[in-house]
Image 1 (cartoon, rainbow, N blue to C red):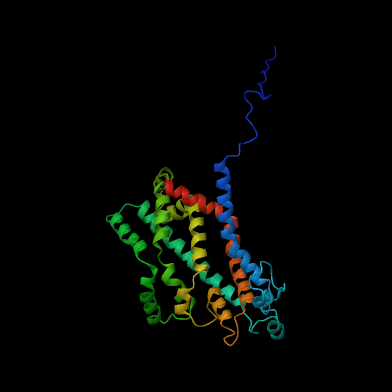
Image 2: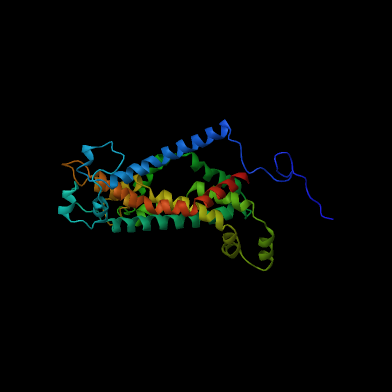
Length: 311
């Protein structure tokens, strides 16, 4: 005999949840707050895009317009170096061109190489402090971690003097080495993860005769792929956006990253108003790789940081 459930007074079965949610004042306030935060966060990006799509001559005629003033793609053409000097000057540009391909290459070399070195040395150090047992391990680790409490500005002058004495000014080595050899945050982040790894596979490898380096590259690194990817993205973004250190140690465009290239582009018209439209277009082009990285891997970064924080 079939068993049926009797309907309730409102026509729904007892085990059927209501599909409609009540609209409460708290829910309305939460969504309103989120909308305001998103608007405040995204508005600068919109204003940069609006300025980049404007005619630089006409910007001063209607500076508060929410829409592009004299819509044109000329600013992006100037930033990419494909506009002639006459076309650039006709739209309010200085006529100077930005070799954005060169600056992008420099930024990629700088950010990629420094990220690789930071992650490699930090992973090796984290393995030594988390998985190996040696006298004074915790003391040495605590001394190294105190670097987190030292402001970066305190180390700029000693690093500059060292790079100058080594003759590495205006070189990729001078850009990369001071920050690529040691990062306290990355060392701490990876060590915290490696402390929680299971030791059974490592012990089996030791029984089979594997040494520390073989265990590190064959076992520990594959098991730590998620936090390594996270710190790689964070260090890449940090190096890509770096401005002050490259400004100190470079004066040649052959090694200057894109952040300095934007400054050169801004100062290319000292006798006239800056090419704000071209500068905003170049800034969008410079920010595009970072935006794509965060869109693709932002969730992984948040999840990995949260996971390590709960361990």
